[in-house]
Amino acid sequence: MRCVSWLLLGTSLLVLGPAVRGVPGQCPDLCHCRGELQHVICFDVGLKKIPRVSEATLLLNLQRNNLGSIPTGAFSESKGLISLHMQHCHLRKISSQAFKGLTKLAYLYLSNNEIASIKPGAFEDLTALTYLYLDGNHITELAKGLFSPMSNLFILQLNNNRLRELRPGTFTGAKDLRWLHMANNSLNTLQPGSLDDVENLAILHLDGNRMSTYPIAAMSKLRVVEELTLGRNPMRTIPDVAFQSFGRYMERLHLDNMGLERFSDGAFTGVTAIKSLHLDNNRLKTLPKSLVYGTLTNLTLSHNPWTCNCQLSPLRRWMDSSRVRPDALCASPAQQRGSQVRDSTAFSSCKVKQKEAKTGQR
Ligand SMILES: *[C@@H]1O[C@H](CO)[C@@H](O)[C@H](O)[C@H]1NC(C)=O
Ligand SMILES: *[C@@H]1O[C@H](CO)[C@@H](O)[C@H](O)[C@H]1NC(C)=O
Image (cartoon, protein in one colour):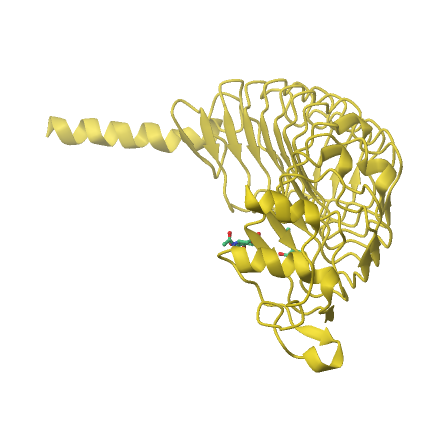
């Protein structure tokens, strides 16, 4: 009997709960909370406004609500936040000082919204931010200095937006940026100087844009790029020394589906560590002398009109000595048309260059 009445009392206390919600220090309405409010989860609960959470909260998950905008100071009572999740929230606008006070925030997820406008100063106070996800939005331009508070930024995801060009000053202050993803935008060009502030980039994704010339001036400031993707840009040629400033580090290069017609002879000058090279679905007939095959372990060449003559014989020698023997059909000369480079008789009378022959004997 006694037991039951205690239970009833407990229940009535729980029922009182919601009346006082909405105050920082309580679990917000419709949300559930764990670990003394350290985690506040409001996943797909029909919120229309950003709830108030206290300084005790480290993680706030607001995914899949209809929030519309992030007003100035929206999180000013939530200074303890480390991780903020706002994917699929129908966000359209981020106001100036939207994240004011969030000096501990390390992870900010804003992917898959309808963000068209990020006001200058929107990211003020985000000095600890390390991971910023903005992919799948409608962003057309980035204000100069937008990322300048983020001296610890490591990953910036901007895939699947509507960026048209990159200008100098875009990344001012983000000096530690290592991964920059801008695939599937509308970039025509990277202006000279636009990457000067992020010279330590290791991964740069630019596939699926509209660049018709290789942005050599902007790229030549990069020093340690390990992975570069340029596939699905309408570029016809790759110029001399395109990759030289980071050639010792570059391991993966994607140049597929570009309509690429030729490489300048010195296009690969300085490239000494490349492992993975993707050239499929282009209009290439041959490969330049500057390409050194020794380090390659993954090469795709299919759907190009290869000319099977002695200029391609370094490729054939690499295939003969390699475990991977990728598809590459000869389109010319006429008697070789349709044969695989790896099987073709076109190379049997090609001379091995003296220098290479000697190296081979050692
Ligand atoms: C870019 O678009 C292509 C083609 O629609 C798609 O296959 C690819 O996954 C997209 N890339 C990213 C990073 O979303
Ligand atoms: C070669 O590279 C492609 C593209 O990055 C990757 O999907 C594939 O797994 C790689 N293959 C090997 C054998 O490493």
